[in-house]
Amino acid sequence: MTKNHPSGFGEDSEPVASRIATGLHKIGLAMKQQSWQQANEEGISATQGQILAALLAHGSLTGTELSARLGVTLPTISDSVRVLVEKKLLRKSPDPRHPRASLLALTRKGETLGARARSWPEFMAGAVSDLSADEQRVFYRGVVKMIRTLQEQGLIPLSGMCVTCTHFRAHVRRGEAPHHCALVDAPLAGGDLRLECPEHELAAETARKQLWEQFMSPG
Ligand code: SF4
Image (cartoon, rainbow, N blue to C red; front, side):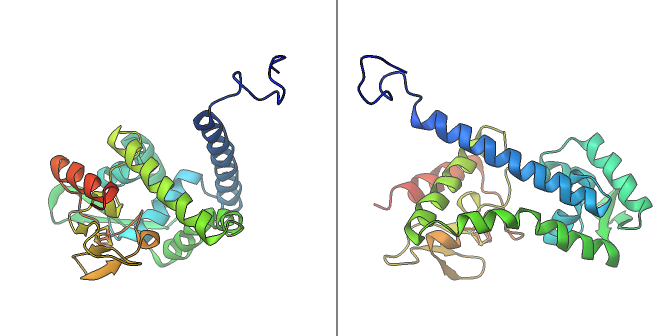
């Protein structure tokens, strides 16, 4: 505590950015703990649950594609896939695009478990729903910005988000839904922006920069 500062929270106090980072760390630990616990109850690992959830969301993928989407190394994916195939939650078939690769698809049992694994982070939605509508809007915008920064730094896989998608059009109109998805030709409000869209197509680096500038500067 600083003696010279009556409030005791003056010049020695941590910057807000550091406190937010500490808070996110605590939230991350809670999410990790929940995933671990729920995976344990299902008799699988958290990574295996992520794989099932990803295949349910995106359809059949190769091990390399899973590795890129989940940000998990290929050897870890291969180990998890071997166990999931043994448990009859996944099946392999030849990939028509690459003769030497295998496509991984969910079995019926895998689909059921994948749906449950997708709901593992839902406990957090309860805490978020305690925020007001305005707080949620600002928070979500902050989340999108942070993920985009971490993606550009290579710390989160570059997939799924509208703001990096070749179909995204930022601020094309005024009003509640200023953005647009050209793929489905539909307006998007700030709260509609996707973080995990299965139709996402990554824009080239220069186009991503332009998209981001347009998104950040309505003009
Ligand atoms: S395809 Fe998906 S990620 Fe791309 S702009 Fe449309 S909704 Fe967003």
